[in-house]
Amino acid sequence: MKNKKEEWEKQLSRFAKKDDKLEHDWDTKYPKMATGATGSNALEEAADQVEEYSNMLPVEHSLESRLRDIKVVLGKMKEGKYGICENCNKKIDEDRLKIYPEARLCLDCEKKK
Image: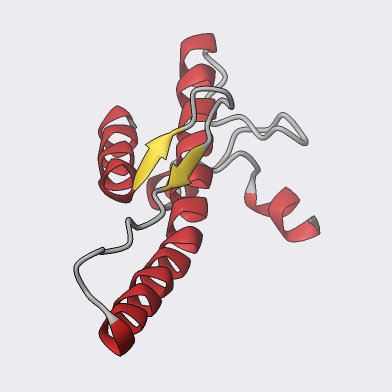
């Protein structure tokens, strides 16, 4: 779990900065517009940078969600509650946890959601 957390934080740090004011929040870095280009070249370069920024926003959101889930799991491990369904308090199937270690619900409760 800790390895995944570190891996996702490393991925996020390539294009986003951790927000010190909000826990678990990262902000995709807005591109710095090049000042050397002029005319249509400058507009095209700016459009490309804005497009890249827009494409990174959903990646940021996905990684932030995964990090939140990992932090919850790490907390549950410390408390000895890992692998227990948050809804019905039954043990989550080991096969489910192998496939999706961040699972917080058993398969029956997940289906009812």
